Image (cartoon, rainbow, N blue to C red; front, side, top):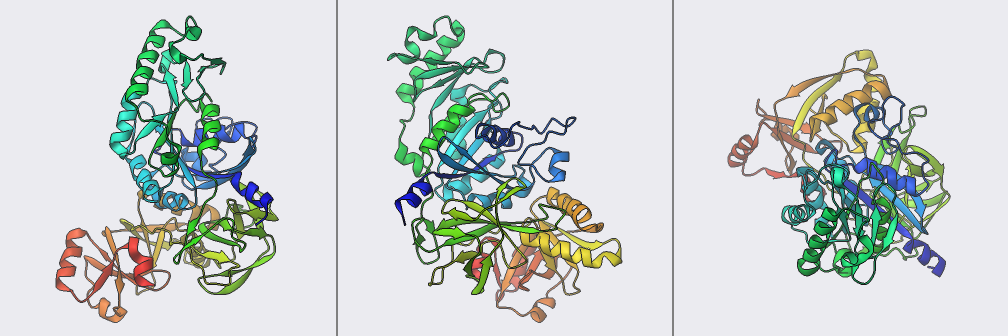
Length: 528
């Protein structure tokens, strides 16, 4: 590994943005892209009349609904850093997509609505970050609206997440009285709307520099709050931040693009460069000479005119060169990576060269599955399996027009491989969908109609629990089916049982102690 390559790797920053719906995650993403020069004008999800939509929301249904329903990847350069942002769906129905994204990043930015504090979906996403030891940076958004007291927000944050925090910037008022933010590390105050910087003296906010500049009421509150957090708050500790044990907190308003610059500058200084990645046998270092990467997302029809599929790959070590031959570890098959792109949502640019810490898209003709490892290593290499989550809602689905069976089958296969919805078949070869949330079915139906020209009919199935079955024949399992228990098969033709509820599952287990059932979270390790 040359010194030039090592320096280039250390310039990389890959982070995911997570939040509860409507906390302002996509708006913050837009502003970061704007600062990085990646876009000329930020589109907002509410600007419907002039057709300005969020850059990261490229799917037509996202533009119509004003929400993100799929993750997207965006890269830009800023202050000498190569920044890759992974915008994720905030809606709980698409949590599995978000969880997988969080396996590919080196840090996470958690966006919280200043009026609502920590919400349910934020807690779930935080747990995934925490389990993986990912550094978490917190952006408290919407300070231009009436908000909770900042001390109350920090208390809420620490109690709800069990994560200590340290404020890097601090708000001066909120809503109609919002006047700016105080940067504790730089000892500067930035005035709202003008972004004018006031450099403070050795006494900080207690010095004369802010007298007459901000209202006396806000100045008194600011001094009281700073005195309190200086005396009783957590100390800034870079080591704890990098271990994911301390979250730096920033305040601002993404919609008005205030506090975003201060956040971005600090974030790029504090956040980690690409590090080691765990495999099933050890670790891969970004400076290793051999190439390695893993597929964490597959997306069909990003360009509807070509009906193509892209596999998103996180490069973990070595150097990628377009046209290189790699081994797909799962099959041992040699694959030539001749078509590769960098992405800005659904905008693409051919990439000939990439290194550890880059996210690239590679053309997929059906070779890849989510979690696949690609490498030039002579030794067999597998990165840690990506999480699989059990669906709780089920539908039987079929095409309205039997003449559209071919389009139906193609759409089912491709959308299933994306991993956004689970697809099973029963003994009659009927298609059964499994999802975490109702909205996944809506998106599935929309995409079948608009991308594959196939109208579908869905029938409700009264099941809510799924378990894989280990070491049992399909014939034996068929004898156990009834109205409260249904046998289906996944795309590897592994048998699963759908149960009406937990009680039905418990009863089944009591009566059939010889049958081993496996939860979805453990499926890859248990069954392979």
